[in-house]
Length: 370
Image (cartoon, rainbow, N blue to C red):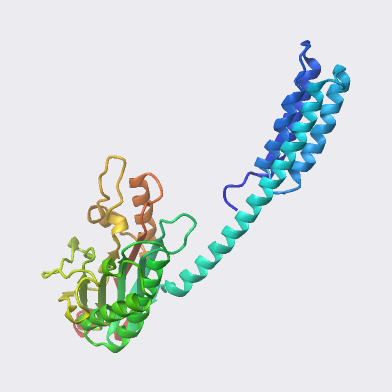
């Protein structure tokens, strides 16, 4: 487990006790340093995860205390009695603290396992190839020791083309996870059933509204989800429906540009579900073009001067190699910009249009054959 001491550190209490005994033996002072042995079992409780180790070191320290008292002729004095009692109490406290720490570590490990299982169920892994695109995802939860937060993503291959969603649930904790689960469950169904992307967004709005009211979320009036839907159609057209989310970035030979909607739409949960019909943007892409979807945890990452991470500026020079390598370098660059672990959930999904064989649009196929 991370944060534990190396096994060689178990020798530190014995080394410390040897130093105390040597100092007392070679010192010409009439003052005994025997009370310093009380620190030895405390050190044992710090460096070891074995609950018996503080008791063992305490017993060895008691032997050392009696040997030092006999050598100095203070067996019957109060300083020796106080030292013996103190060593016993410190060893006992060390045993109790080591036992409690071990229980906490086990509980934390179980919670981490549950979080990992929940992440695998809710945020499924994205294969390298989905239909006509190559895909990669990177997700990091801000909560300490957590594997899942309020950000969501999914990629599915449908008869309407490859469809994906990236979103950000307002808030954190279990409430945000429940909301993300409701949105993802609705998307996985609607993406296959609805031929129009704006109607997929409407389906998600209805499902979100129902989930928030059925689960009786506290502060349901303030709950909302920003998300962007994208479809890579068989003819090489990319469709985008944005509901209050940061715009995707299109990366091609001409450079990087943000796919801003002409008519911005608020996040899901703000409007009545019947009124959610976002504008569908359509952009033609060529094989090799890439689209990056992300959450605000990436673009709102700030350095020590308060400067936000310049994603659109940094992406072109980092977009070299396979999508998974691009996201790895991009994440490392964001962390380097901040100087520490990100303070917010962050998700990135990169889609690279790369049709093969029969997936090639007619105009691309004719161009390759000519």
